Image 1 (tube, helix red, strand yellow):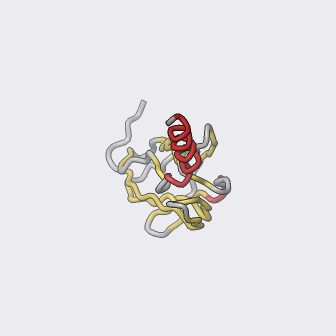
Image 2 (spheres, rainbow, N blue to C red):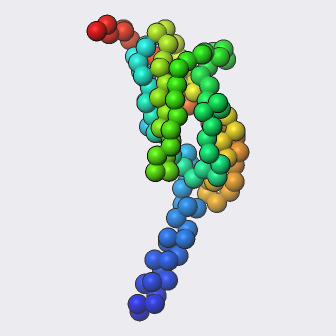
Image 3 (cartoon, helix red, strand yellow):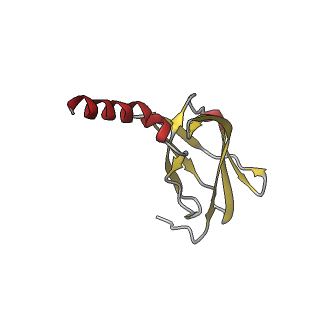
Length: 122
């Protein structure tokens, strides 16, 4: 009986990376104009995400922004200073190589959100 439980636990631990079904992020649907977007990006990445592959677009137009990326305990954390204009934006992370449901994928990740509301002046 002990061997059966041990083998079952071992099988679960070995197959754990395959169980990650998708890339997950904590990005919200809406931010305030000029706000700092801070999000966690997690998944089973096969190659590191590079900071130079992160881009922000609005209506297919590249928007230059100040941002930073760091990795901590297997997850990536991104901060991005949003423009002061109310718009819909798309955050694109290019050439992400990851494992999803046991299959390798290499593609661009896209996350849509908007900046709406009034800016708060301090």
